[in-house]
Image 1 (cartoon, one colour):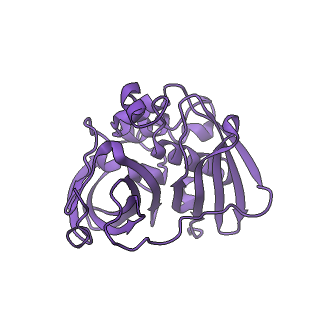
Image 2 (cartoon, rainbow, N blue to C red):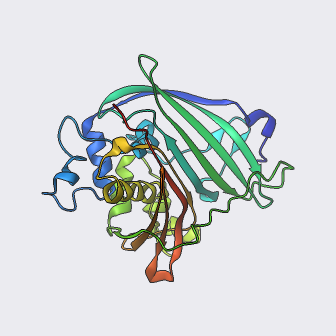
Length: 290
């Protein structure tokens, strides 16, 4: 059905209360590839019992971590076919490092809707607070919906995210495990696009693709490990655009630029002529804490 912008914009989609445990955090980190060197103390920071450090990207899956059904895209004024959906971008901001366990309430709303002609972009904003009212994180997700444009809305801002015009300061090889998409499903992303060959074929892909949020989390971890001494407390915000797809079994290349108070990056697949996967990657550094 056509998007009803007046009904959708600003509407509160849902309020969800949930909790998480260190085991959830450990599984999330394992799904990103943590523990490849199981004796490395830096890797074990992500996997220790009771008090693992938490990548800020865990916020993007925390509320749906135990979901066992494919997601539904049904909001006020918006009804979307799952096969028409592609994740366009993701951003998470944290005022402090996330705790390894806790409870939270997330309020979601549709913040923006852009008309791209043959498609629409729907921007969702999730704000999470602890049970005592302490802000935990803010998450913004933009969803590209094929066939839902043409409703007469604004096109929105430009999506161009050029890399710096100089050689990267570092290049990181990031292997994707053959079973990584199946493992990441345990973090709540049950979209059959990542597990069902027939569904992936119907959507125009030769085989199931890796979840965009998995690539997003893997890249955040790679930046934290390589540039920030594997210390997640150094991150206050992290964002990226989904510029293409990665497949299980790929080896990704993360090109990194150190830009004073932030890290910039892009992610490509060298074996496919440097096909882009993530663009506009930006990790903002947290102010030094006392």
